[in-house]
Amino acid sequence: MNTLAARAVLDTIKKYDHIIIFRHFRPDGDAIGSTKGLKRILELSFPEKEIVLQNCDFSDYLAFLGPEEEARDDAFYAEALGIVIDTATAARISNQRFSLCKELIKIDHHIDVEAYGDLNWVEEERSSSCELIAAFYDAMRDELKIDTEAATYLYTGLVTDSGRFRFRSVSGDTMRLAGMLLDQGVNTDVLYAHLYMKDFEEFKFQGYVLNHINLTENGVAYVYIDRATMAEYGLSFEQACACVSYMDSIKNSLIWLAFIDADNAEDIRVRLRSRFVTVNGIAEKYEGGGHACASGATVHSTAQMKELIDEADRVLGEYKRTNEGWL
Ligand code: AMP
Image (cartoon, rainbow, N blue to C red; front, side, top):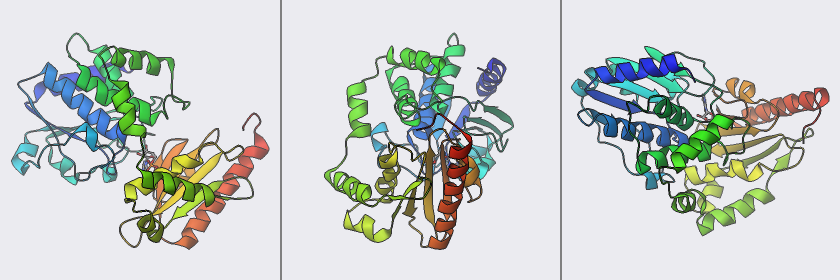
């Protein structure tokens, strides 16, 4: 834990009456949990401050966590401290008006590729940005307050970004902080029902995906979901994107890829996942990035999709030839 960075963040927060919190576009549980969690902690701790979330795209899947604030005018931004959480690069911030803020803090756990804040606090080894915000609370607990609501937001990101505490990013600290949050009274029955229950159509779609997984020579598993398939199963883009997790437990398939047609005609979203072997290098060649074992990218044609699959196959082949102990 970088306590100097945590101290600097809290001292900067104390200077401002207005605070705007941002996250990345196409938000996941960690992006929403960490921003809502920090907002709630700051509201409890500094009731005189006005703290708002200002983002331009939303998640139906995570709507149960509640809405965000209406757009504020430029004058509000000009006087405000901006805090961007869980977002590696400025281009990925959901609301590009972040640049109007008087001062900007970046708090993140992704690979540190761009220091776009005036103050940048990145801990790449953290399982989630929610873990980092929980650690922030824990380190500064004499000056901050937490409650069940804040703990529930943070626990959401801890659970979702760690694959339910299975990924290698999970440390003893992750579990200790999870324990601290549970002690606040998080209702895990309700939370897990929201996160893991599926609509019937999604079950049928899961069957489709399992029947359409392809395997390359070296064992890369991949599936392509086009617009027609989404329409056939009555799925939103967000629901279709969940298919990447259906491929996560095939023996010898250390890399798995989901390609999903985006809303605009030109883009195909790529979700890359792996165990043992690193995939963010592949993502970075295709307008993407992320973590060693969970990254995102974009391709623009089926030809480019094939190129990416070939590259992943090459990386996996090389990994298997030069490493032992994988499965
Ligand atoms: P996704 O499959 O889109 O959920 O991405 C997996 C992880 O990689 C998430 O933590 C994303 O925030 C991150 N990620 C996705 N796309 C990019 C990108 N273009 N640049 C940097 N990080 C990304």
